[in-house]
Length: 139
Image (tube, rainbow, N blue to C red):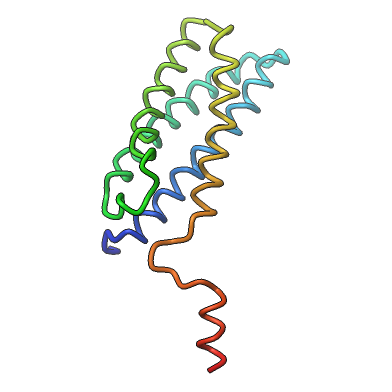
């Protein structure tokens, strides 16, 4: 098993944030299918929502692993807020409060893609810039 160093933790964050973005995209597709009259997909929409909560809970634990001082100061707040927002979103959906469930879902889908983009754009801790690596190879 790999040691829990800041680099490994950031890779785990990339994984959880990417998983949330993919699940959010699936949610959008399932919601669109439901709104088009394919009612059985509503069950899969709910199951995917539960999966998102589980991934968000894992992510909130990962955020507090080593290397947290090198990450954005707002990341712990976001990491704790996402599972709460997803659970609230699920409650709104179960009780059919669609006037809130749909727009919040759209904002969350955009937000998860933004978070995944941040995770992939942020360099891994301890990684050498590509230019420095090329200079060392050429020398």
